[in-house]
Amino acid sequence: MAGSPRCGLCGAAGRVRCQRCRVTYYCDVNHQQTDWVSIHEQICELLIPVRTSLPFPLSEKERKHNMEQLVMRQKYIIDLTSRRAQEFILDGKHKEAIPAALHALHFSTEVYGLNSVQLVPAYLLLAEALAGAGHHLQASKYLSQAEWIVLRTPDCSAVVQCKLQRGLGLFCAARGNFEQALDHLANEVYLVSSTFGLKSIEAAGGYFHMANIFLRQNKMDVAKSLYAKVTSIWHAFLLKSVRAQEQALQSQQEMSPFTEDKEPSEDPLTEAQQDEAIRVLRTVLDVREQAPKQQPGETARVLHALAMLYYLAKDLPKAAETAMKALNLAKQLPQPESLEAISHLLKLIESKPSYSYTK
Image (cartoon, rainbow, N blue to C red; front, top):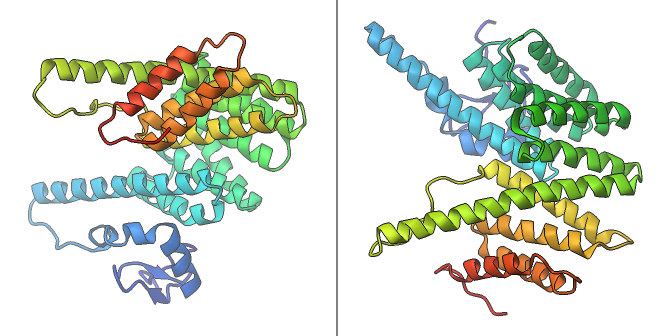
């Protein structure tokens, strides 16, 4: 029957209703529990005004206002579900990411339409979650849909094209098709470099995934070279970010010496970028520390980059711990060029009012 409730996950007949929001249905309790753990707990109450029919407005102005409010709420849910799915993926919990990614796609479709290029990120996110959970056939269908949209959109932005190449590359890597994966990732690096520059943090992602593939093929020299490139890009970017934050704080203190210190209003990295950067640098650090032939200079550089990243993310205990490791390692080098920068970072960390630790 038309209008019958459908499962929020699989689309089957809805037999179980969420007793909190009362607007979401599931085919069984298992799907309800799966959705709850993934994302529904966070969006339960947000769904009520989105899924509840409003009285028919009397004027065009009211209709327009109601529609604007609806779209605004839907876009907020898209952002929330996308971030949640990405967090699960970064933690290696691909199965848990699937419901959140599904909701991101459903709401993106409602807001932008079936064939909009705005759907590509949601398709890629869902495909990555499915591939990571071992559902390769389903993942390939969503990837194909994303690729079709990009191909039929002549003015598609380079950013979206880069995301597509990344998605295709990761999918091929998950299936063990390393040569094709490297081709896609090389295309990503080319597109990113043409748009943002060879040494941009956007380019670092492609190099990182290429390094992972070479590592899986036991091509250690190539992998280490690419990991070094990733570290160098992030290290340079984070050095500039720390200096920019320090200068901004100094300017604020000079302008308002009697007011309470405040952090700069603009963060150099989004929360999602910070999470990805931490995951990338931790992976590189693990590779460096577990390598039979140690390269203490490269390891110290990774530790320094991680310490700066923790500092910018306001995780001061981790920043101090990691910076001390970098400092101790740098002291053992024949030419410890980074000692001054690491020592300065430790001073910045210790100067924070909320920070204290025992050396």
